[in-house]
Each structure stands twice: as structure tokens, then as C-alpha cells.
Image: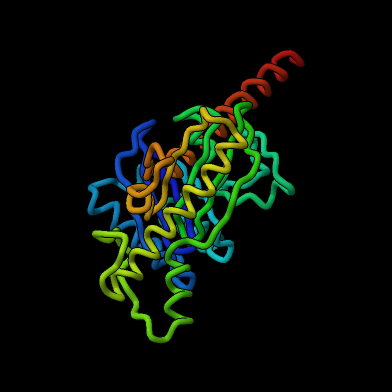
Length: 272
């Protein structure tokens, strides 16, 4: 079985694949000061609740946008699952041309999302990932990652509002019953929700104008189901897109290793 891990700034997602089937997945808070043992124990507890034998994990692959936690998760993988983790970056041969300057600036999660989106939905497409930051990733009709847009996430936007406006109360981010708020709380919720939905659709429309009308739009991330309700352009919500991308990358790496091994054996036999 394969353990896939997506380390984000706010949340970390884990999933277990048995061949091509995602048999369990979880989300936990990303805490930078947690130790290897704390993450390891949490992961083992999740496995126990899902009645999955952690000893059957044969490989671990990780996408991380939090470099300080890379060592922690590498040690966790080795100590608690007996595997050396593979970390995704632009140096891996992913079969995805990256037209970004420089390619190393593209976050691992964005690469993974793009690869999964092309495989599942085809190209051209746009992936909107609602995380700490909201990212818009563009894949052209040739299947090339050409860039995108990065904006503050809705939670960051709301935190900034409450921090700078002393008299405004902190409110829950949710879809209000109506656009015109009849109270301060309702007005803030309407501004956050519909204001952010307007931002998302405004950016998406301009990206579609550049990529072509046939462009598919896929949303993922924790707040995707909420914001997508008000979007006119988001077609599909895929909450396991990143996990699936990690599986696809691992399968590609495994296939390349198999080819190299076969080629090596053939060369040895020819020399003999």
C-alpha cells in the first residue's frame, strides 16, 4: 500500500492507496513545532481507527510547501512506516512540462494538482485550490503547466479585516441567506462570501479568455465546496485531487525505475 501526504500551511492531508483505490484519507492541522513522534503517533492512530495495518505500507510520497517540516516527516516515515519518503519537486521527471520562471518556484502541491487534473479531466484546464492562499493553476491545450494566479485565501482576508477594524466582530465564514445584510454580522458574512466568490470568478473568466472557452475548471481544497456554491465557472469539486496526483507521480517513478532496471539487465547480458 502507498501512503500519500500533502503538507500545507494550514492543514496536512494523508491518504492510503491500495493499488489505484483510495481506501482512507484524513486531514489534520499543520503544526510546525510538532515532533516526529507526535506526527507518527497521530498517523498510526488514524490507521488504527480505519482498521488499516500500517506495516503494509510499502512506499511514502510527500508534497510539501512547508520546508521546515520536511525533515520531520522524513524521519516519521522512516521511524513509523519503515520507508524513505519521496518528496515531490520540479527535478522529478513528472511528464508535465513546466513553463514557469524559474520552474523551481512552482509549489509541489501545484505541480501535483496540475498532473492529476490533466489525467482526470484533460486539457486545457484550470485548478483552483482553496488553501491558506488560493491558487489558480493553468494548463494549456498542449498539456503544459504555464503558470497561474496566487491570492490571499478567504481566511487570511477575514483575519486581516478583523485585525484592522476594531469594532467589527469576528464571524463564521459561511454563505449568508441574502446578499444585503440586515445586521453587522450578516453584512460581514455577505462581503466575505460574495466578495470572495466575485474575486474567484473574475480571475477565472480572465484566465478562460486566455486559455480558450473549452477550458475545464476544477476546484479542490478545504473551502472548495463552500465557495463553489456561488461560482458560475467552477464545474467540478475534487477534494482528493492532490492525493490522486501524488499516486500518479509515484506510479510514474516506479515505472521509470522498472525500465532502468530492465535496461541495465539487458546491457549486462549483452556484455556477457
